[in-house]
Length: 377
Ligand SMILES: Nc1nc2c(ncn2[C@@H]2O[C@H](COP(=O)(O)OP(=O)(O)O)[C@@H](O)[C@H]2O)c(=O)[nH]1
Ligand SMILES: [Mg+2]
Image (cartoon, rainbow, N blue to C red):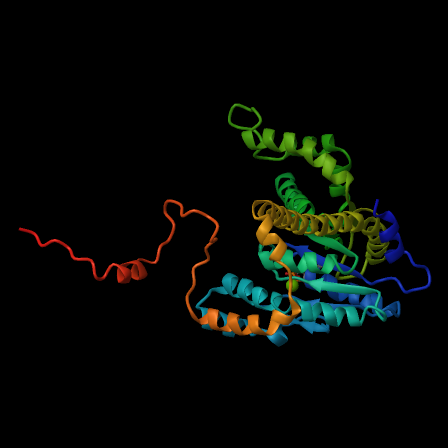
């Protein structure tokens, strides 16, 4: 339906493609910042320097030069002090404060969109702060509604070799995918320490995962029966199978630079996905919002016009005189000004008074002042 509109805005051949935003998300220590540094230097070597945003207010040294740094606008230590917060609340509040200025950030990014191909976002160390906070969602949505965007979910590969850890990490990734609905790349980092082929096997074939689960210690109870946790993970691996089909996985080493080229190939595919799936959905949602707003306006207008018709039918005589008279305009304005000062009750003079109608008792009393009440006794 809206494909024509979206096609026109995204695939115009002469204009430069919009930059794609890479949103890095991952557990603390997974290597997000190191990864951003690595892809930054890769892009520099390709003569396409990116535009980088650091959204981690608590980081002491970033290994890259950010174009926009949350730390330039918000002093995290000052926030903790002023609002009497611990580290987590401090980061969250700093991010919230920064989000209130995010329209300015977007303006700056958009100004550069002619000259850059990639915008990169580094997020706070602790994953929940970005993924489950309102400001994280606002930032993600704001970016994705103005530029193509992809989530790079960074995984600490050496730390996910245990089936249970692997599964919880994948469930986390899954929840982020369904929350953002953006194209998604699983980035198995630190492959210099631990190759990621085991992960690919488990994702490709859930029976492999189930075998690994069965042989891993702690998956059987004292009687040799599979533990509850084990059965649960067995069934969940079937659910995740569907999720794995929707995403791309690459192995990289932010230390050595291995796999970075493959990562950018996945980014190219993600751009197509964004244009094919996300953008039409975004435009559909926008059109829907626009339409419901329009419908609400139309509905109010219809009801207003109906009221007017009913009123005219009730008082045809009043209606014939109820015309705009340009001559009267000035006088009326003066009258209105006087009226504004008095506190007035809106009443319809043609209506009978109804039970519960507000009557100005003070005025009624004044009229009754000379009534002689019979004295008691
Ligand atoms: N061996 C190895 N270490 C890495 C790699 N990437 C990151 N690290 C290390 O992992 C730790 C956490 O990295 P950092 O980028 O700060 O993680 P962040 O909290 O996700 O931003 C640091 O000590 C990095 O040196 C990698 O590819 N290989
Ligand atoms: Mg970091």
